[in-house]
Image (cartoon, rainbow, N blue to C red; front, side, top):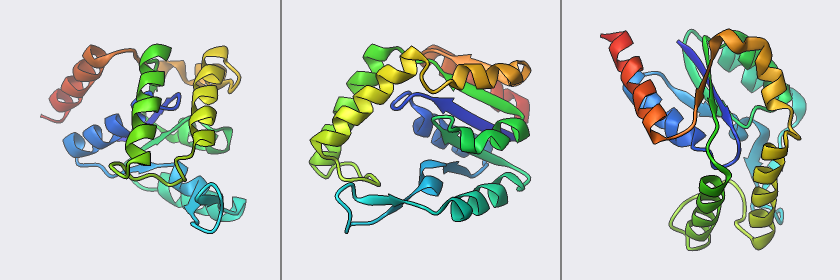
Length: 173
């Protein structure tokens, strides 16, 4: 099984990937970790990997027999969409995403939750802007995945998530 989970910042991609990984016994990977490396010497707390290094990591992953990957749907990872058996599009409401962004940022500022960047006010503003940009279609994610419509599953809420997990459990029985 090869599953690619996409959606806006704070749509629940990592949470769903972890849950599916545990349920299906398939490793998952956040593609953010392929794009960025922790680097405490920078103001943001991370730096971008070289494109060649990022691509080598990515292509070695998608050659594997099974995987679950999650990302905002960056175009540099288009081959993940092609290789996946299922594409899960998380279409969570803006209100919920923005609440999660603020909640996560507070937890990160307090040191309760780890992150790959410095949780400064500037990062909070960026995440809220990315959430808005997603709603405006600035990333063209929905256009790009429309090519793969036959393998796209749209999830909009917790009930959809639970139903999808249940179907996955039933498919492995």
